[in-house]
Image (spheres, rainbow, N blue to C red):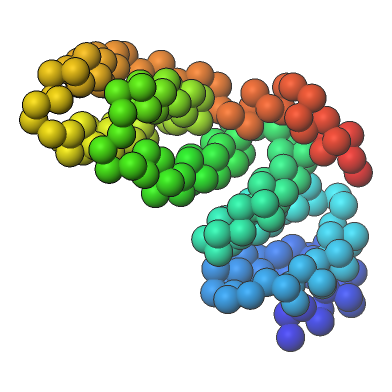
Length: 199
C-alpha cells in the first residue's frame, strides 16, 4: 500500500509522511527488492528534501548490512555520503569494513600449528588491519587466534615462539591511535571519485 503511494504523492507534506512511514516499516522488511523498484518514484519527488534522502540511504545501508549484502550496503552509504559528507556517515560506512574484516577471522591462520614464519607474517597482517579499526578490542580476536596457535605448538618447540608472544604483548600495550575513518580516506582519494561525480 505504502509503495503504491510513491507514484501519486505530490505535496511536500505527503512526501515527508511517506518517508516517516517508510522509516518505521523498513526494519521489518525481510526483502527490499520490491522497495528498490519503487524508490525512484519517491526520490524523484523529493529532490528538495536531501535530509530525508540521506536518512533513507543510511537506513537502507543498515538493512543491507543486516542481510550481509555488503556491496549493496556500501553503495547505499556511498549515496548518503554523496548527499552529506559528514563524520557520522563515515563512521557508519566504515563499520562495514570492520564487519568484513571480522568475517575473515575464520580464514585467518587456518593451520592449527603454523610455522614461525607464518605467525610472523600473520602479525604483520594484523598491523594492516588497524587501518579499519575503531578501538583496540577490534583486533583482539586476531591476536587471540595467534596465541591459540602458539599454544598448539609442541612443548619442545615453544622456545622458538617466545618472540612472537612478546611481540603480541607489546602490540596490545601500545596506545591505540585511530586514524581517520576508512571511508573518509577513500573518499579523499580517487577510489570514490566515480560516486562523488555521479548524479
